[in-house]
Amino acid sequence: MAKALLGYVGGSDPRLLSEMRRLQQRVQDLESELVRIQSENDALSAAVAHHPGESLLDGIDIDVPQAEPALT
Image (cartoon, rainbow, N blue to C red; front, side, top):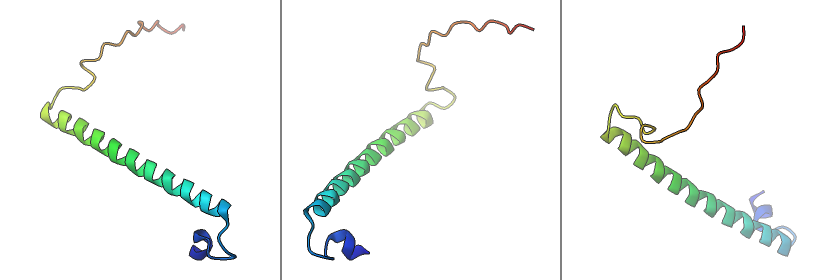
């Protein structure tokens, strides 16, 4: 199976090599995104640990209309 994925079976097919390169690039992109998200998560976790009892949402001003009572 691994040989088939690497293009050894039946010679090197340009379409297969192109697809393999595309998939390798996609994996690299996803790994980079994972590192970025983990770093962001670590920073948020550190912020929460540094300010216990405070919510990260305290500084966000959200304009939410008052809910109306349900009709009974």
